[in-house]
Amino acid sequence: MRVLHVAAEVFPLVKTGGLADVVAALPLAQAQQGADVRLLLPGYPAVLEAVQGARSVIDIGACFGALRVRLLLARMPGSKLPVYVVDAPYLYRRGGSPYQDSQGQEWADNLQRFALLGWVAAHLAGDDADPQWVPQVVHAHDWHAAMACAYIREHGATPAATVYTVHNLAFQGLFPMHDWAMLGLGSHLMSPAGLEFHGQLSFMKAGLKCADRITTVSPTYAQEIATPEFGCGLDGVVRGRGAHVLGILNGIDPALWNPATDPAIATRYDAERPAGKADCRRALQQELGLRPDDGALLLTVVSRLTAQKGLDLVLAALPELVQAGVQFAVQGTGEPALEAAFRMAQQAHPGRVHVHIGYDEARAHRLIAGADVIAVPSRFEPCGLTQMYGLRYGTVPVVRRVGGLADTVSDGVTGFTFDAATPGAFERCVLRARAARAAPAEWQGLMTRGMAQELSWAGPARSYDALYREALAAGRASPATPA
Image 1 (spheres, rainbow, N blue to C red):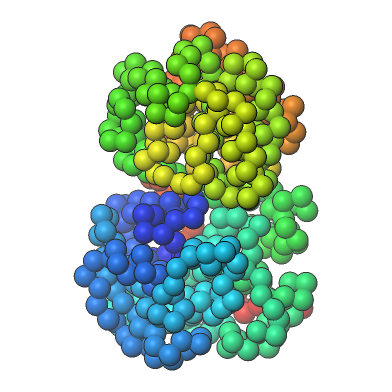
Image 2 (image 1 turned 90 degrees about the horizontal axis):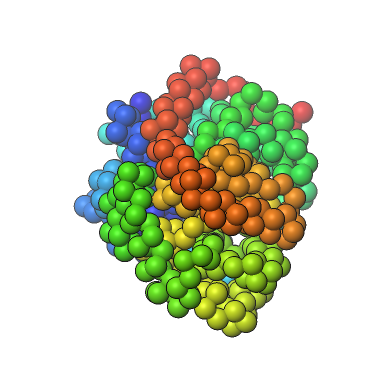
C-alpha cells in the first residue's frame, strides 16, 4: 500500500499542536506494518534545514503567486521516512508560525500557500510529478491539506483514494469568496453544495465534501461533530456523509513517551518500579520553586492557554483549590488574557503555583512525570494527547467527558471525569482526585490501570489500513456538484 500523508506540520521539525505528533507517529507505525509511506510538507525553513539528502524531483516553475516552485524528495531525520518538500521560497521562507506572522496575524496569502500543498499532492497522485512513485491513497490532515481532496476529485482520472482527517473542526481555513480564481477549480464548486460556506471559501469543507472517507481522531468526536453543539456550522455536511465518517482514536509514541527510558526525567520508573515517580515529584517541586509538600496534590497543565481548553475554569477554581492543598504547575502559550491571568496567579500564590509561558518539550516530560494529576478540562477535545501521556506516566487524568477524553479516561478506574463546563464541576473533580490520593491503595490502582492501557499507534495504524482498503475497493463517487 503506497500512502502519501499531506500535512502542514510534523514533530520535531514544525509543531503548533497535536497534529504534528500524529503526522510524525502514524506514518512510522504504518511503515513498520509494511506500508510504503511518504510525507508531503511545505518547505518552511525549519523543514528544509532538517531533512536529509534532499534532491530535486521536478522543477514546477511559477504558480500560486510564487515565481519558483520545486518538489524535493528527502528523508526525515530520525525515522528516515521519505518526505516530499514543496520548495517555494516566496510562500514558505519566512518567520513566525506556519500560519501566522510574529504579531499573531494570519498570513495574507494562506490560501495560496496551502492550496499549493494540496495541488502538488494531487499531481503526485495523478502520476504527474514523480514517475518513480505514485500513491494509491492520499491521506490529508486538517484544513491545510484539504484541497488535495478537491483537486483529486475534480481531476476525475486520478485513481488514488482520498482520506481526510479532521483534527479540529473549529479551525476551518476560511477565505474571501472573491479569491476563488486563484484555486483553478470549476465554478460549480462555488455553491453551498461545494466549497462555499456563509459567503466564504472553506478549505475544511473541501475535505468534508470531496474526500472518499473522513476520519476524526476519536470515536466520540466523530459523533459530536454531527451535532449543532460541536459541528461549528458544518454538522449538516458531516451528517450528509453518513457512514463515510469514522472515528479512529489517536495513539502516542511509546518510545518517545516512556517513563522507563525517558532521558528528560529525574528518575526512570515503570509500573513494576513505581518509586521513581516520587523522585520525579520531588525534583519537579525543587525545579519550579514549589513547596516540598508530600501531602499536596501536584496538578499539572500542559496545554494551549485558550478558552477551548477550559483554562478559564482552572483559573476560576484555582484559589479555592490552593486553599485545599493543591499545587499547580502550568506550561503553555495562547490567549494574552489567560497568559496574564496565570502569571498573576503565580504572583498571588508563591510556592503553590508555577507558570511557564512558552513550550519546552523536555520540561513537558518532567511536568507529566512529576505531577500527581494532569488536568484537561476542555470544552471540546477532538482527541487529546496529554491525558494519554499522563496515563503512560502514572499521572492520573482529570478531564471533562468530551471527545477523545471520554474515550480514553474511565471515571474512577483510570482517572476522574466531569460533565459541566463550570469552575465548580472542575473543582469538585480535582477534590475527588485529592481524596483518592489520600488512600494509597486506591491511588496505586488508578496509576497501575492507567499505565497498563495499550496506547500505541499499532492499533490505529491497522484501522487506517482497513479504511484505505475499503476506500480503494469502493472507488470514488461522482464529483461533488450542486444539488
